[in-house]
Amino acid sequence: MWIIHLILVLILIVGAVFFVIFNGSRTIDIISLGFADYTNISLNVVILESFLIGALWALIVFFFIQISSRIKMMKLKKKNRYLQDELDSLRTLPLEDISLGEEGEDD
Image: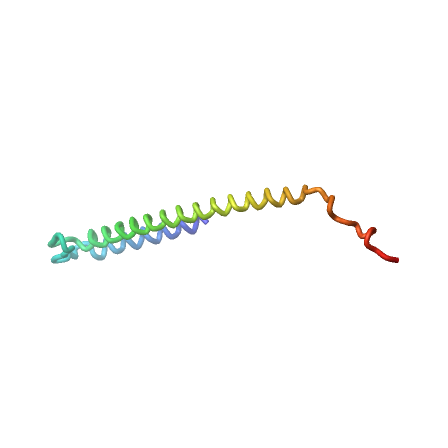
């Protein structure tokens, strides 16, 4: 599995290098973010910052999904432990109220 991750990272790095090489001299005239205006920014900087903000957002979402999954897993483990204890107690229950069929038979 780690080899697939390594190959994907290498493809991403090679793609980023080619992107920087082919778009090194391109600039964006103006970017308005609503609270600030930026002029003459390199396209590479805009793409890199967009990628980093997206990666940070994905990391935050992944973190909350992991936390909720772990909480759910802890609850399920607790319920499983309770049910296992109940099953063990039922297995060791004495058989005093069970008839073996000899008392009720009429031959």
